[in-house]
Length: 350
Image 1 (cartoon, rainbow, N blue to C red):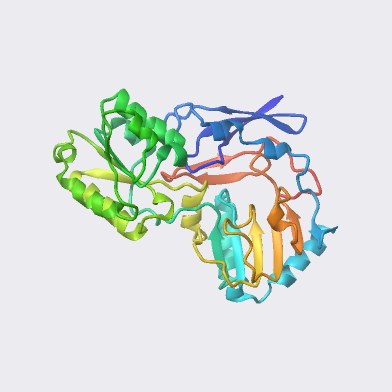
Image 2: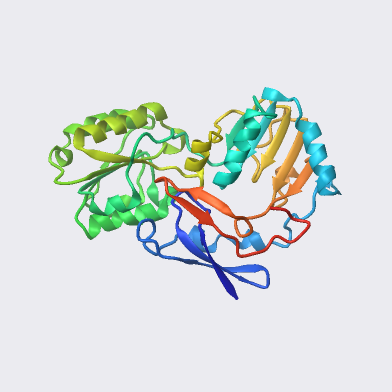
């Protein structure tokens, strides 16, 4: 059994992991300590959600209309199907696209795929960060922590642990703005402001006069999500930045997609509606909303067969995180490298 140092691909935190392989199979994922990011922890998703890598049903050969084909013929068919579509071409990107893939893809969008509609799988509505923001390790020294529009246990589990440690071990005060009960409520000292969905920005603007923020006694950490689509993000982001300026705090947008921040930097983290497109390139899992009924040509690039892609005109087999190399930019802006423990055996291609 051999091991390779890599990065978890399940969310935007970027926990450091060790990937263990034996006879070409991924058999274990363990934590690898990085005090600045994960302190040696990984969540259950990161530890156990890897069995698809070894799935016997893995796609390994290109197909055209369900019939095995060469890579050359399959790529020619894809090019023919999407050529000249402009805004009638839709592209669904995976949440774990690497920085390198994202920048290469940007070149295509600036060239032959200009005008295409792009939707990134699993991304939030959060805007790109402005200026130097909060880093994960900064949470340790915060005297007041404000969490807005996010259940951090589900969205960013290891950041959730960091917040809990700051409260229970280091005496930080915690304010949560969220419509529902969340994991951070387990500490009875949590000040939970239960807002109506869509009103988080208004609640944030009231916080400058809150007792805990009048004299915080040290750094203030402000972390905000998108309420899974329930908040108007431009206004929420602005309100959090305004609060940070008033109380001397720092802000962290809580992206969820693995390399959402890297895709934003590359300009490919699309949020377009795919309704009405006539050709669709589906990279990774199909769009959450399903394949639009308007699609006449479908090219699927995935590592597993899925019901939504059964009628694909062209299917291209994809590699997994255990076979790819590149880098991710995590939610705080740190670039880390993905290293593959498993070789890419033909006919697969990286």
